[in-house]
Length: 581
Image (cartoon, rainbow, N blue to C red; front, side, top):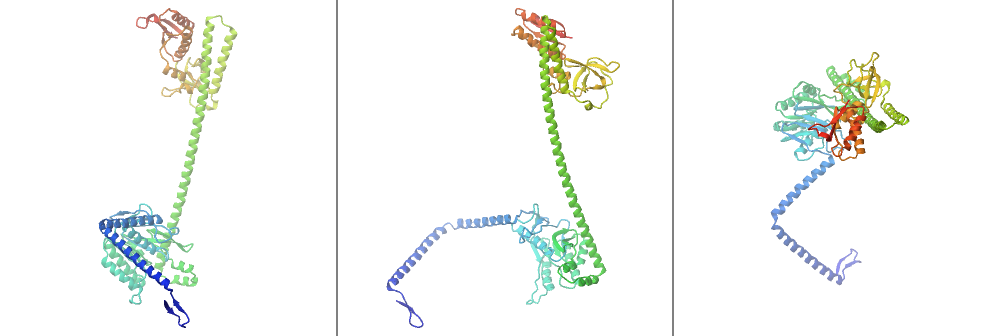
């Protein structure tokens, strides 16, 4: 089959008959395939038609979820937050950022409107960020009302406005015969007709592009109309008259975009409460305009205008100085806080070290006291044995030296240097039995004798009696808490510990004679140190051997004044009552 022929007639485009048949079969199969697809789609459409309400509802749910996830994704990208809405038409944006600017380069701004003032006049140099500020407020307001998170700091507030009107940019049109001024004025006239208390109005370069005097007067009239109708509005301008209007009118506030005169560049920080300079001369000089032209221009401005600009410059300079002082004060406060934390940490370390030293000293003193007490108990038992048999003088002297060495160790361990004495006066009046502290040895005891003419007296501290001078003593008041026996070696501490735990009665029933006598010796020593008047010794009646051994031991003790068997109601002959000296 010939399909075509070349223009020269030397070439023919042919198709073999075998291929023609195959193509015919392929075409038929393709048509059958399409018919099958149409049949399947028709069948599926029929099945889906039975569930149109459910499918439609699912579709709307998916659209809503997609919108929610899209908002969340945008919020994560912009590091945005949920604004707090109010019904007082109040705007308070903290660290607001225009969403279309590079987040790494944008300078966050703080803007407030509707709380102390309803109109905000923003002034400052060209390329300083005035228009971006207007767009940021308008765009964040619309984003919030659309249910989007806004790129701003936490606790930023927005109000719900019914309309947001903006006249930003140049709508000059040759086709419509509109100049810069006329295009702006067309928008402004339309906005003034429609705006009400539920509107937010944004004007960029209000009434610019015409005679400055007439433009400034017209701009003030427009702002006054908005103020009297209580409409929230923001505008940017270079007119000094509008700056004066904002300074002298209640409910209208100045704001400026900061300009660094030293570097001749804007900082893009918005400062509410101060008017700003246009800095036209500084910017022109930076852009390369001849300095002689700038000087000539300076000489042509009026004295009043120059004076006003100088006042603004002084205000900005003072503000900058105050901010520097505040920053320096902040650094000083931070340094003081850091030093205070270091001092507190050092104090804690010192207290911890002190407590550790005291714990170690107390543990050491307790060990010395325990060892000394064990030696004393053993010496007392030995002396009791010496009293029942012919004593060996050498053995007695060794025991006495052993006790003396242990007590010397205890005194040396607990003694404090002379310089550690308190600077308190010596006690004026002492009575027998008064609790005192021996300052040189840090021992607590009781007054055993009254001072002599030289002020020397004896103090009983445990089983030892010391001769000290009254100047080396400190009277312990009753309200002063004495250390426990485990933390001191004095008699007063030992007495207090013993008096808390000693019982006025001991039961020896069931013990052998040797066990009973050892237990009785220890008990009587503790009871005597605790200054008990008398004790009750229960030995039982039985054969009388334990009773006789107890009474024989009581006869040998020089600090037992008297003893007798119990009377009727006290235990009769099964009990012995012993009285201390």
